[in-house]
Length: 440
Image (cartoon, rainbow, N blue to C red):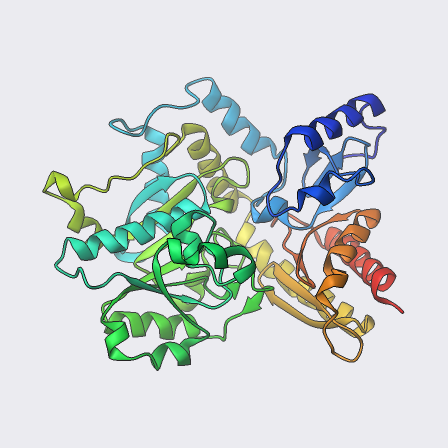
């Protein structure tokens, strides 16, 4: 655990904040509020394990795993060593026209999590949005090259989130993020659930190339849990209609559900599996789209059938080194067994919080991913303009916890390395913060 210290000088901190407010533009942020004279942002200076330290020397539990990326904790010696070793060889080389051994090994190991070489091909990119973007374009091009040009529509679920690039954004179901861009991307039909999907007309289904879903849990939809068995039923339905199933495991992948991949809980193998965030243990931006061999084969032969898509840093060697080190740590530290054990303890803490704090309307959990929905004591929602969730998260900083809300649902999604004691510290912070901000 990093110790509380005096941090850097006040002059250095003030300079960093002033530079930020003068030149930086933060994601999902109203900049006029961020740059307001009275706003003092938390400026992270170092980290160790699940603890972040700011420039003032204050320590916080990383309650959202640095936007759902960190797996084994910050500043892990084996992760660091893998990157240092690779830096002594090459930091980056092009994957266009060349290969390198780390990308080869990583692809083999990722595919090895699935039986019978079902997902046998790996296409590397940079982030979750591009992992999804690859799957969408591959699905469409596959149809075009197989005489199925009429199949150009995707089916997505309401309130989903699949990334911010234009194609991925058009499949997003959150109007605040995506409504203004929806007509500029893919052709998409939205459904609320599996029952509504099954009721679609044959005429519509004839135009569909694939269905995309976040398996087991929708993250940005206030951590909403899908019914047990829904994913397996969806896979059967798509197979019967020869539609591609695209699983967006950008959030759920790499142990957060208790399985290495969430789809493994229901023994589902998709046509496309989109991975990012935890792929490198939360160290570097990198993504992978795993693809069924039968789809890959449609891109062979004619040069015009090649998949003309790629990024400058595709298969970056440093990212591959971090990803391989992370996979090693899953085995060496028995990470999945630890997640399953800690998930039981997390469930107990959630239920205890629910019973003690009347403003906790509902708690939702999948593995070590949790949402705590806040409402008035009578069950009525807080007025949106009160921004209760934001206020609770701001207050939690005073109790050594950093996390973010989705509306009035507080997300708790820590690094998988978090201990029981650290979970207890985080929940004491949540309880105090909710009571501070919500009690009349």
